[in-house]
Amino acid sequence: MSKEDEKQESKYHVGDELLAPAYGNLENPFTGKVEKVYENALLVEIIENDPADQPAVNEMNHRAVVRMADVEVIKAAPQDEKSE
Image (cartoon, rainbow, N blue to C red):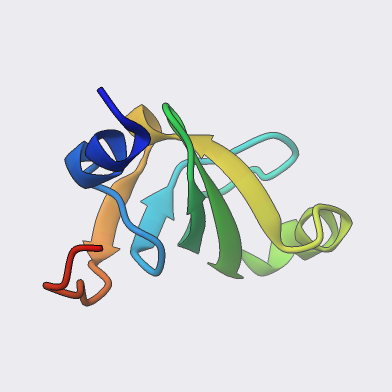
């Protein structure tokens, strides 16, 4: 299976907004936007979080790597129909 096939099979896409559970030093769930899709994980930019978690979010540079199995898509990014 080529890398292109793997990307097409993923149900997650760059730009998707996700709800993720508490992670690392974060004590509460947060909302993030997918920046990169890995094989079993996603790099997300944390866009909404509990105010109590703000110091931890700042330490993490507003980024987190989360397992695909732990997140839920709350807003899918628009997808281009063109395939290159």
